[in-house]
Length: 145
Image 1 (cartoon, one colour):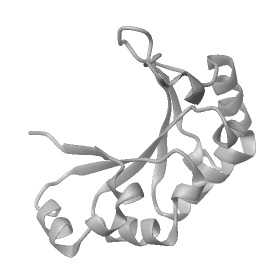
Image 2 (tube, rainbow, N blue to C red):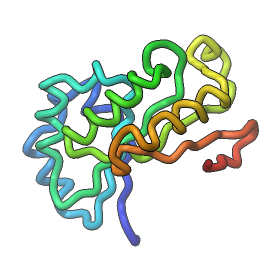
Image 3 (tube, rainbow, N blue to C red):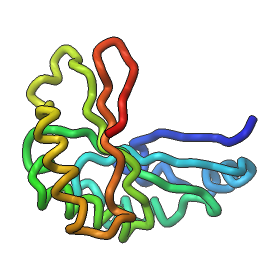
Image 4 (cartoon, rainbow, N blue to C red):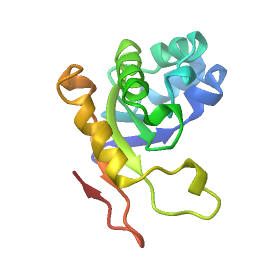
């Protein structure tokens, strides 16, 4: 095994699950990559920040967010989100434009809007806060922009 990657929303929706025992168990794995799935800056509460601070180090912590409709698709919403992630010592890794999934159309924004969001982030925040933009094409085959 070359590395361990964990993709999770647990620190976001159940931060009390990040216990000293869990962190001690995870410390045996190196290198450890932890991708936090966060969709909005309001998710990054004090409890979540404390849980993220407890994750075992050294670990590469990154974040994934969906390219959704609503406040998170406004330029300010994404800029605030990525900057708040950095304050939690989590690097924004990618914004995910997911494939059409039954029942999720109300959460989806256009690819054009996703590109606008990415263009608005570049030059308006630190490069560390600018994630990749990933489009999951129908049937798989995600493409990066």
